[in-house]
Image (cartoon, rainbow, N blue to C red):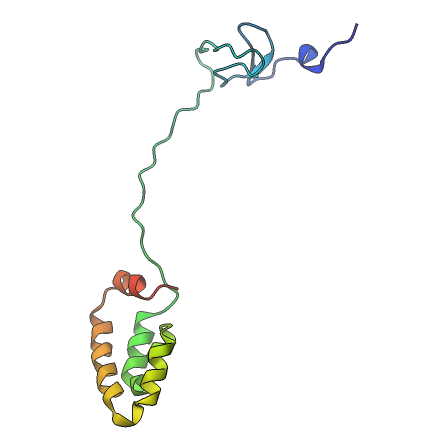
Length: 129
C-alpha cells in the first residue's frame, strides 16, 4: 500500500483539514484547491483583513538645488551656466551665442529673481531629475 505525502502529513500550527476531502490546507484558505469546496470560517484562526492605507500625496523631488541654480543665474547667467545646470542645454547654448549682447545677462537676472521666489516643490516639479 502506497501513501501520498499529503495524506501522511500532519497538521502544523497554521494548517487545517478540508471540510469535504480532508486534504491539508492553509488556515486562511477559503476554497480547497483539490476539491473546490468553500471552507467554513474557524473562530480564532488567522485571518487576513484588507489593510487600507491612505495614499500619500506625491511630492516631487529633484537632485538639483534651487539655491545653486539661483546663484549660477546671478553670477554666470549671462553665459547660460544656470541653464546647463538645470538640464536645458539648448537654452544654455543660445545664451552662449548671444552673451556678447548682454541680453542673456538681463534675462538671467530676471530668472534669478524668479528662482528666489519659487517654492521648493514648484522648483522640483519644474526641474525634475
